[in-house]
Amino acid sequence: MTESELPVIVVGGGPVGLLTALGLRHYGVPVRVFEAGAGPTTMTKAGTILPRTLEIMRRYGAVNNIVGAAIRVEEIGEIKRSTGELTLSLRTALVDAETRFPFFANLPQHQLEPLLTETLTCQARTQVISYDHKLLEYRQDADGVVATFQTEAGMVEVRGAYLLACDGGRSTVRAHMGVEVEGTSLDLRYTLIDLDLDLDVANPQDYPYLTYFSDPKEWMILVRQPHGWRFIFPAAQDAPQPTPEDLKARVVQFIGNVDKAVILESANYRVHHRVATSWRDGRVFLMGDAAHLLTPMWALGLNTGATDAHNLPWRLAWVHKGLAPESLLDGYEQEQKTIAVKGAGEMAEAARHLMDAKGDATDVMSGSDWANVYTRSLLGMRLDVNGTGSWSMACTELAPACVGERLPDFRLQGPDGKPMRAHDLIDGNFLALHFCDARRRLDMPADDGERLRHFAVSRWDIPASDPLRARMLLDIGDAFRTRLGVGDGSVVLVRPDDHIVLICCEGTFRDEAAKAMPARPLQKD
Image (cartoon, rainbow, N blue to C red; front, side):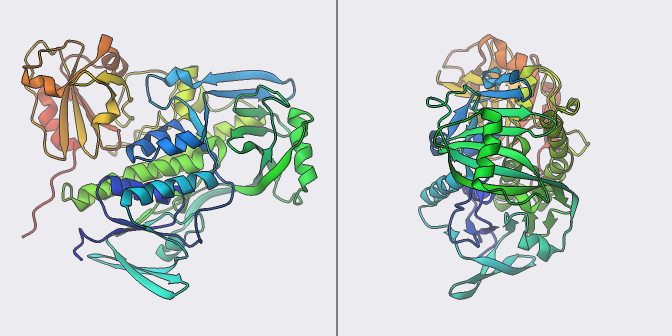
């Protein structure tokens, strides 16, 4: 096979590995997934999918069955345990204009993985996931990577164009790379309990379906799941293994006596904030828990990994298709590592302060309720897209858009009069939005194949006979323009992963876009 025909090898069949594979397939890149286990996990693990992750799943054609199976949550509650007072109620309706998924989706990992697997298999129309394949080693050269797996039938070698390590916190790939992890592992564990009980009818409590009980001595997180209720507590590192009755007693301390509470499953998790010192070795990349072990607070682990699975696949696709040089791949670690090292740590500290009720949270959670929801949903993540050190995971106010932020998925009217969302215009391409008064003639550039699409955005419509109409979006009431904080003659350039890379005026767009977009690769002789 030539390099362009070789599949990308994904090691690890968890949510990040499956999302990455779906992303590569979405962009037309061949992929194979290898999982050491016998099938999707049966263990209860991560349980909350944030709106930004739902947007990523939609892009990859994987969201409908997941939302259909999940418990959708439109309120986050915070309760002071000592008084039972609801100290904060955040309604996700506040960000309804920003995303088509203004809710959190509660779905445990042992139900999520089979749905992602089903979607991947259906899209590929063949089996692309190989179970019982334990990675032993790999080697790479200028043209690809060869991975060696242990299987029941013996050792198997697979050649691919790249190898993506989604093999968890004890990553074999990371060890083979000789990469260390830096950070801390706290003397703290979380105890997770899934209970089959009824808090809606038999024991009505009316708690929000995502509730945080804060207390200096012992906090709790309550999560409504499709199969029951999940309770998460802190546990001392040296604490003995609790009995089922001990676990039930801890639940009763928070919510009172309940009828017919049956423990479905329980687990203990160590609290980490540790990040790999390097995420790339040639054609090999670390992703998800292999790259960063993050606290499960505020669902940072799975959902930060999902942003890895949104950042790298489009880059690999552009290199694979000859739309960009190999250097485009360097931006993955530059952007995602900063978020994992600093951003997630900052949010985790804020979460612990709020839960422990021992002091004020950091500035991460300051600002309006809108900003609080925007931050917790990861919709406000700003990447360091131009290497200037400008990044953030927190939003403290509703402000004009800036470079590095995700483009809000605002409602618009398409050229054919049908309602649509801004993200519908992005499908592996860069997107240039030209804000204008459409009544005046606009000299808008032609589209550049798969690389760049152009659309005019205006509150003024024009006749269907005008050639510009086919590339014009109606912005009712200038709502989108107002949200972005731009005026007539402004151009906003967006990457395939929805992040803004340029805001400029029409007169300088061609020159500025040439700098902001990946250069065309040199043609080989």
